[in-house]
Length: 253
Image 1: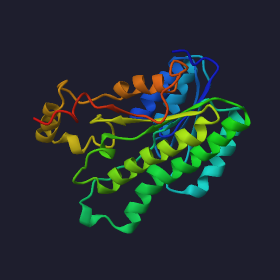
Image 2: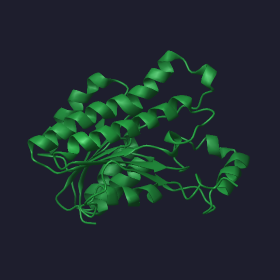
Image 3: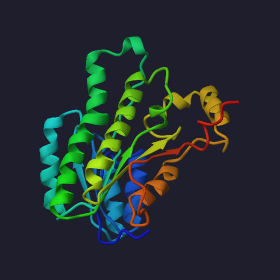
Image 4: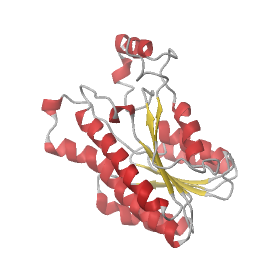
């Protein structure tokens, strides 16, 4: 898949799944702008690594729970890119909590980062694509948690289901302009979000046994299908949810 000459924005691109996707895009020739919230060293290294591949790499620090910060991000994007061809809505948080311990402040923070910020970032990027007559690709990184529940993820599962609903609507609205929108639903992927939770060896072994492939996913397992969905090779998949979980969901017995 060739992304040479294309410009991509990856939210939450300094670590985990976002980092894997950003690096795969750069390796395929794309100029990539990542957002990050706190990992300054990781973001700087990501940009340096991309530039060493001969592409343009940029970073922008933003707290995506603060919607008022989005205009500044868009000004930065417009200053770097004349248009955007690919948008990966990846940034997300999942502070594990019991349902009865989730207060309004925590729920609002998770909602703003996981859904609201991506709603308005997508709105602005899509407007940019349309104004430049760019037939771009937009991908939401949802989760298997949009399909199945999690005892300590009731706030998180709510947001991931919402992302899929948003994606369905945008596939209709933006499809009229030649912009294709899909979502990718990772299963249990070892990232910073769940690293502490899976440090419990008993729980990790249980999760591995539930996966027919016998292992937890790696961020690179998500980057490969993500690249296909936002590439020119994808000519007709629009409004779809792709589950990428090693077969965990169907393993009920």
